[in-house]
Length: 103
Image (cartoon, rainbow, N blue to C red):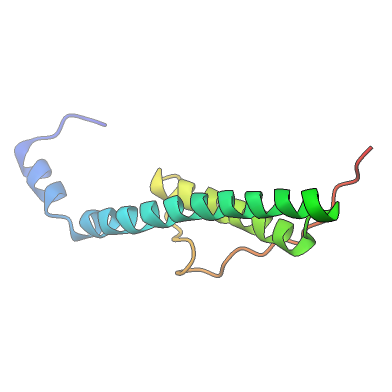
């Protein structure tokens, strides 16, 4: 970041794209927070499934994978590493989940 003169500063503060990015930042910040709560709920549910049935649910594990990818996309957008807006402006991530082999 270089030194700004007063005119550049006024131009930057009045930039509508920057303020729109701020709105997205707030919305995706809330979405990220909710996704963390959803991750915790899914984790507890998976633990209970493993505790009572002896196995976790594959579909929920796949959802967890996709949720992790979504959280990474949101993080990249929030930190200005990417200009690509995540879901709902893009499709929700879908990654095939393969059950890891346990040794």
